[in-house]
Image 1 (cartoon, one colour):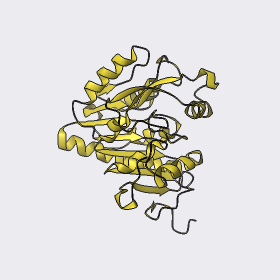
Image 2 (tube, rainbow, N blue to C red):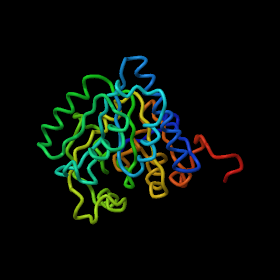
Image 3 (cartoon, helix red, strand yellow):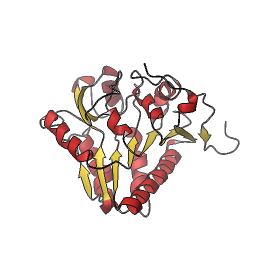
Image 4 (spheres, rainbow, N blue to C red):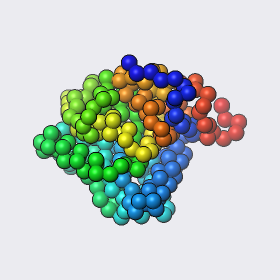
Length: 266
């Protein structure tokens, strides 16, 4: 088990009154990171997350002013194995409809879970390794997963992308969010960006609203840094910002939280 003292824990945690204000603040920071990368390097390489928790954030990000999306190169975190791109739960469809097309992103690399997984992992791995990722947008699953790295996650993986088997808690979350009608309909395998690859990003922005994430947030941000709480590994990254609302932060006791609540709010 990997543990870490508070002094080594560099994650920045901000708490907002609700999911909408959280999304706007996270989008402002994300847009700033993208603009800075373009100014410094002529382009920005980003990683985008999906799921219900990311919708308001992506809407706000697309509307952020001053982003030259033609100079943005996007990767994404994960995709189900065998799921058609036109399925309502396809993450390729999700990102095309909510980010790629509205923002008119210049270059994007979507994970194709319908073809040979090993070949897809190799090709994407070569492409993402060509240059550093400037900023990765991530969420945290109800079981603490980071991308589709379910517990116990592989903190030492050497490949940028992996084929993984999804655990029952992860698959039930997909049903609970309304993407599938039953757990039997949720694919059992997925392609995911590995945790070491996520941690190679220059900056990471974690967008984590909703009370159903509160226990995972507590375990990942206040418990040991360990594969059993995959997103706890974010605390090992030198430039990670976590955006929470009052519900997802409801079980935290850390004293270093930056509150964005109105004065007088409980």
